[in-house]
Image 1 (tube, rainbow, N blue to C red):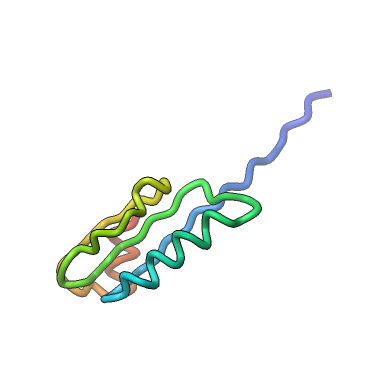
Image 2: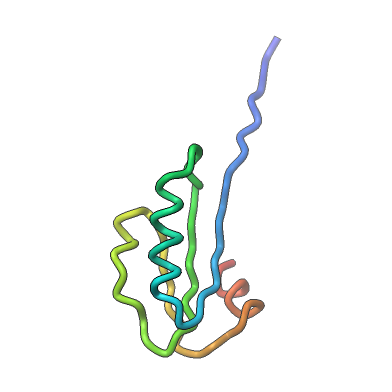
Length: 78
């Protein structure tokens, strides 16, 4: 008998606009989860990129200087 274990992955996508404090707060909260996500992607539509220390937490950060809105940011994410 062969048993196949199903692996469930947790992928998180966040769209942000002019919210550096909230991004940092989210990153810190993700560190305290009982099950860490497999992938976290933050798409920041702010005019300037945030200089936040989040890449060391395994979070992928993409900056787009034009406000793409939620749909555009999701398209960029995939």
